[in-house]
Amino acid sequence: MKIKNVELKSPFILAPMAGFTDCGFRSLCSSFGCGLTVTEMVSARGLLYKGDGSKALLNHEENESPRSVQIFSNEPQVCEEVISSGVLNDFDIIDINMGCPMPKIVKEGMGSALLKNMDLAGAVISSCVKSSSKPVTVKFRIGYDKNSIIATDFAKMCEQSGASAICVHGRTKSELYSGSSNWDIIGDVAHSVSIPVFGNGDVLSISEAREKMKIFGTSGVAIGRGALGRPWIFAEKTQSEVDVPKIIKKHFEIFLKYYSEKFVVLNMRKHLACYIKDIKGAKIYRQKIVTSQNIDEIYGLIDEVFSK
Image (cartoon, helix red, strand yellow):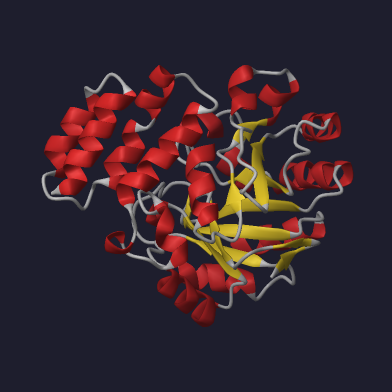
């Protein structure tokens, strides 16, 4: 399938997740056949003013192809300036986050807050489309709360503003990650616009993703938490069919190309918890992981975990 002029490897893509979809994890997912990778959300204003933390989120491996960068902002002019600056040129697609439910983002009028300000959301999208020759996509939730389910109207606005595709998470802002993703509403969105629609929420395998596409008519599926600790999900393999210690160490190797050992050790702890969550004795090993101080110590733990 294609998003405008960008051809995807498959309709099953990696959903952006703050703190998790780092360059190492994205590279692994891509190597297992993920159709499109998306960065963690990056502040457009942070990029414009050359914030090192924001720019670091743009690190990527060449095998991530095609790749999308997700920005968040409520300032059309800032989006236009960031895109025109060329800082995002290494990416094939520009995605706009209009779904993050976290209080620190919402209180600044960004992420899910834009569900309550459709005119401003449209202006942000239009500014990105006007400034870029690349496809612009939007990820959003079905509504702010259960009394304001606006998914189909918001989707139509995205299309009218020039978006080339949309990704819909089937929960409201108020639900955060509780309850179940509402795929009936995602299906309504898929039938309301002519651009590609990706559904997102509670999908734990490619077979489930295919079933969702068949039942609800989406163009594809974005897999998020279902891929954590299992980048091989996109190759439809099980843990017993892959060399997990080798995969984990590859994740570390990629991360170490861009960051210090101390930073990598601290930031890989959450990934390691996901990689070993189905292993007997995982709780004990998690406790050992959080006290590990260097790579060699962690590698020894990985070998010990999977040798049993």
